[in-house]
Image (cartoon, rainbow, N blue to C red; front, side):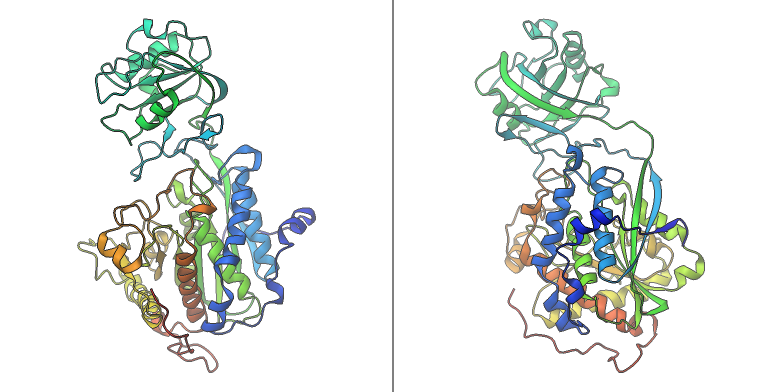
Length: 521
């Protein structure tokens, strides 16, 4: 494959990151039951805690591809994988970043910090605030100034519509402006003329949980950071004050407009196994810019790292290639780059791709990718390369049969190329995987089956700053990681159901390793 460089261990960093690694002493987890017993939520959360800490490097607050937090995350998984006996390479590439903040935005006053999200995103419940499209970059800690607010209000605010609304505001202050009556551009132009050093523009009470979305390019304000916020945020900041000082507040935001960012994929494969029958096991390692991304997708990344470590002494019949992709959040850039780097022969050697993107959602459902498209109402002619269909259906069956053997309900989810398996199925490589849900809302029927709360998003912190270690459901994480471990080992030993190639030795073709008694739930 093109563009790869081998891992060069930096001694000091290796000592710091590899000290906890006990995988070298792991037993030979050469069947499903033993591997699943070894892959634990506790082990995965050790990696998750490390990823959250790495997100704070240089105060970035994220693991966005091309930032210090992502680079350190890539080194972390690479070094842990190398310590587990895998052959590790980095695959470098550049990409255009267009989603906003390169550092996580901040809006805080005293001990109160508000939850950032991607403005304009379809997230429920909605974030507290987000960076306006095209906002200037800045980080200011100064006076927050209420600009002729109308509180409480469900409509009719004229805040910021007149230059006189800003009378008394000190130069450089952050202007707290309420939506209503006049055009956003008028409000921002008046804030600009009054010398505001930043803007928080919040909604009216008739849409209390929605952030304001503004294109700065169409509204003249370039003095400093500008964010849109919900009505609840404006009300919390203002209290009963409608005009005047609201105390010292920090505001950091900025729309990245720099050159392409340099980043990498991490590739780690077993030295053993048939190189002509490769099992690719992937997850995206990057987060969005607003937070550390510990469920999306620290959970998948940490999960496959834990599987890799617990396979330390196992000798697979087929080569396993673990892949941690960069820049997924910018449109599957890393996985597309990887697939494009392969020759036709190299693609043909990949028997199957397993993808794990968000496997620890707090209000989870056990979703399995609909590999045979039997539960897809209108897949369309181009939904899946015909060459990938039979194998993808077989991979789906591996997961469905596993959950059934454990007495655990599961259900199909769209197999539409939304995650990193997309570039693989586009070139005819069979794929499958697991998902625990993102911004969509859990139904009453799903709550009755899986537990959790009906009417609440599967992941209430999807693409928000609150996607931290506290956002991971350990029960769901363990169940999905066990299923991932089972499927990985099953295919690593035998791919007959996917491509007709039987495993070597006496490994049973249908992987009839004894399983524990069915679990509740």
